[in-house]
Length: 446
Length: 118
Image (cartoon, each protein chain N blue to C red):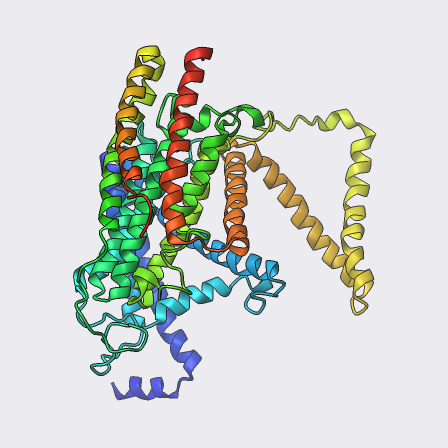
């Protein structure tokens, strides 16, 4: 024992770490190998027999975990875009162009003290952010990202979506009530009144889309918009689009309808008494909501994953190398060196400290990256779900940008204007749209 | 593994994700009970007075009532919208009547000044 102890004391810290890690790693590897040898076949057989279960686990993991990077990305977009609109620099220290700052924010919230005030109703106080977060993540389940790439395709998808989105109100009321704070209670009731009022025009405005598509399945609605730019429901439902976009902005508590939070007026609304990660989940949910609101707008009115023009996807690369003859030889011989020189030349010209051979090395590396990227890209683009995902994400983030843009531009509305607008303007407009659409279907018979 | 089980399983997964994160935060964050003042409700630095769960304006309540009326209407309209192509004129007229009756309620609320926030 003493011999071991003395040897241990003589080791330096890296030595100690290695002396622990190497035997541990070896034991783990051996154990894993034995485990795979013993039960591996049974596990593979079980998974093969229960493919729906596997699909569920994969879908749940992806949908749950994709909220984290998208929230970080939207937070970063918000900081940077608004800063640029205000002629500020915005985040520029952590990571390239400050892009890691939102991750730092996330870690900071994770490490903050999570305090429960005296007098708070502890179980309700803890469950409120969970309800708010779950209501947004559960509605992510039916959002169609690409052909064959969605959590689950329900035939009542849209109804399910609004039902789950409506649970936010419960969470906000729970937060407001359980905090034992007058500001929280008022903020919670205010946001409940706002969300509940805008729920009506929101749900009524999509009836026109359901009438046109004849189904509530979001997948079928997107499929119904296949074709070119002009097959999107945006052109047949312009009024519904406007009503829907305004209502969805209010639902997601974004400026100009962010009276729920209104940081400069009512203390912080329902979140006054929250701190740490429970506070974090409210705002996590808010940014996930922005993504979901954009995604739903895209799926309903802007064709979802469909490309805006008829494009012969998937791409078929029909190149016959033999047909080029001597040209192929020239291409293979001259193409790479030329590309290396062209890619490396800017570095040589722009930075006087880089010698020519170093520029050539940079060019060679870049050329390889570009070539591999082009080949892989072509291979991937021939899968239609990759193309669909690209189009969907592109349109969705264009809408996220619009939300951020509105926050940078528009002032906050007053609460009486807010409520009056929902009931006196948006609701009649949505009903009008409903009847005009129905009448058009009746008359045009299509 | 379809329909309702997807939702249930997904809900369980999501709730456990949230609680795992909150638990991890609880483990690594610093905790301090502080003194009696720390747990007081935040009311802009003034000591709290009066009943917290007291009475509030009725306008919240009326909006909730209106919401219930119209939200149930929306469910009917959704079902109607799906089968509209087989109902045609009859469906159109009956929905016009249905929404008309509800709009009478909205007009009444409007006339009474309920829709104006006070």
